[in-house]
Length: 392
Image 1: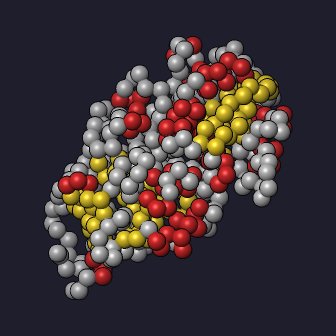
Image 2: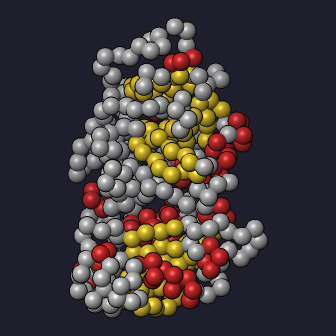
């Protein structure tokens, strides 16, 4: 073992690339994390109840009761004037003849199944047709959302608003919000929480046929569950294919027949209550952990550690099966999780420049700021060492 502060001149680093692009590993800033059901005092799941993850479960970052069971969404159509001035619509002339019933049928055909698979049957959005609103010439898309919330029925706990206008090519495809926490007692009506997802018309264009892509809708619904973006560059572009909350079209880019997004990060699964605390471990000192696939249904699927910079770091195994079958190979990913005022505000891959979501294969080792070393071994065993705890 190298002594503290000594870094190998050439770390042995392997990365996974996707079929459409290559990823690389370069500079490692700040610290990294890991752990699991592991060896000699290196990691533990028992301390989780008193740790930062338990606090996050009680924060606005977490989905709370809205991620368990059926989640009723009303689907609304927003009619955008032909002379709309909002830049998001880019002056595009097309207006699609969308109806709440037709859009509800399309969304309900695949989105509930996606979340059912992601949550292992714990969560399922349920879509019913709402109504239609028309905004003013100078209104922004938020006006669509406000009108839909005002018109939603008492049983709706969120709204999905679809505009009949496309967005400009340089504009965001939509947005979503978890709104306010649910009241202490039921119901959790959208009029109280203002949970909403909004998308433009592009993914409902007739050119898609009867199977339009739903990855953007799934991304925005992720926001209604309290999930934040991951893997964005300084311009806000989504660069990671590891998470529905980053490049949600990554799976479709690898396989044009795919219509759903990739899976999501294990920390989101934990916050939603879909990954039990018993399958999460916290690393400290030296830990040897055997990882199970993060989208699987058993085993240690998330390992976390609080770095010396005060941020939280995660380690998980991405298996190229199921929702992540767009990945060329399986591999271990490491993410830095920024927490402000008790809530997650940003998640970034530690590997990759730009953050294409590079993954480590067996035999790879990385060092982060000369404080932590992370080594991947055969059988997806990961050794995490806090080098500052070792004798000099």
